Length: 312
Image: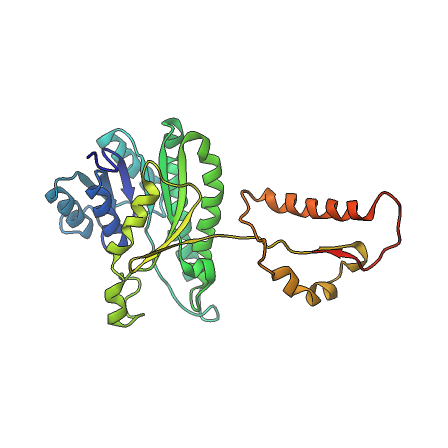
């Protein structure tokens, strides 16, 4: 049987240890040739070189590159090396990341900016460097590593959560822009025991959260039949999907449009019956115009005095 990723060319950032290492090994196991990116990868004794050696020992092909993802010139050189070695880039896994956890009251702006630079701008740099190549070849698979801290919040991680939710917004737009050229963009929200989670959880829990239990979800997001614009969550053998939804909400006529009325009806607005997952940002506009038009139709063509009528 032909491997799932036979001869596909993949770049994995932050791949010396933890999730990145696991992703690189799993991609190679499925037939991909992998550029293993990590800081210090140019040293013979680096973690990235150890990953390259492990892939080679298993019969695969891999090279290492030490690009700092916050430096677009280094990222460009990394992509050029992959192309020079194998002729193209089919898969990009934006995995590189750091933590600088503190409550917002104690967090410095420098630490906030650094986390955004690595997670958000690092992913932007790498994605931008492969984007037109993937569009020109009418094929590409890109994964942004998001987090439940971004999707749902987590105390002490304002910088990390902001960066991770920003990656969801980036994915939502790029998935639409790349679709007609065969470029699929998805997000993975992993739960795994890595250097970033050391000391945060009990050992018994950490033992359940192996990076290897997450990587199959990563491979599914970069396969030829991968979905597009999907947020998968994975950890400890479980896989879920996160969605950004919109409730049906309410309509207020002109006499009702006040903060007081809204505050009284927050429960109605939050009612999740008939909620939807918008296909694009314009769906909010379409939905709201449709409700306004429906209200106008119920009022009829004749002029009437304002009343307290509303459409939910």
